[in-house]
Amino acid sequence: MRIASVAGRAVVVRDDGFVDVALASEGTLPSETTALVAQLDRLAAWYRPDMDLTETIGATELARDGRLGPVVASPSQVFAIGLNYRTHALEMGLMTPPKPMVFTKFPSCLTHATASFPLPSDEVDWEAELVVVIGSGGRDLTVEQAPGAIAGYCVGQDISNRALQLLGSPAQFSLGKSHRNFAPVGPWITTADEVPDPNDLRIQCRVNDTVYQDASTSDMIFTVFQIVSYLSSVCALRPGDLIFTGSPAGVGQGHRPPIFLRSGDVLTTTIERLGGLRNVAE
Ligand code: ZN
Image (tube, rainbow, N blue to C red; front, side, top):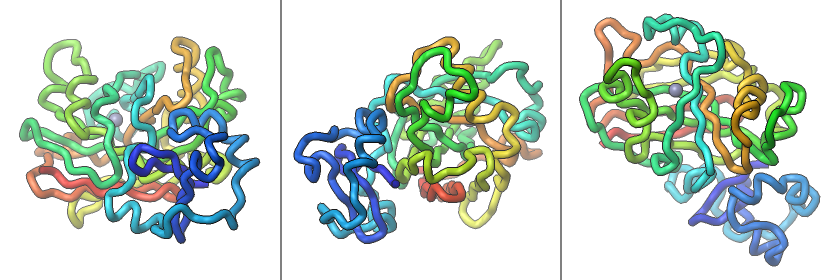
């Protein structure tokens, strides 16, 4: 099932239209995705594919017309994992970390699949990432328990102002990755039952017509389930929390000389099974 947010309301997205979950269920299911992702069992038990559509505007049009909001508007936490692909750590000239390297993208930078974003310096870079959406969540989850805590997956861009991210020693990543609209997530949440293996998905990123990143999530150093387990050993994971799981090789910073985004550049990010983002640099 594909779950999205239209005008702040949780919907089930189909090719032929969408169903407003709270409206169609007469309020028995939540109106926001943050709460709904913790109740996917109830949603699945209630939903029927022949249900009346709230609107006959389907998945492609919703994404193209920018009617979808960020998949979760106000998660309590947004985690991001740095250097989780060996080839990316190498191109950044950094060591692969012994444990997941964790920072945050502050939630105010979340935006939808087709949002444009500013260039606060001339060193703004791209990072295509698989994003985990936490469902029931919890604490101290084992790797085996992790799948049960996950609602689904979406595509994310960890847009990065390298000038601010790498300023100072030791560098503090979070602010340089949290400018306005620096975290497009979407276009919708694909529920976990439709993703047989989150660590076997092709992930790509294009700037204009040039493919810069083309890899598989099977190349991650720490798998999705290992990351969820690790984070839950420190923090309680709550419904709607997001985890950016790291970016493969091919970011602008990794080139000699580096390549950064210019005004008007079109950033296209896609993941097999999950859809795509299209974001323009302002
Ligand atoms: Zn990243």
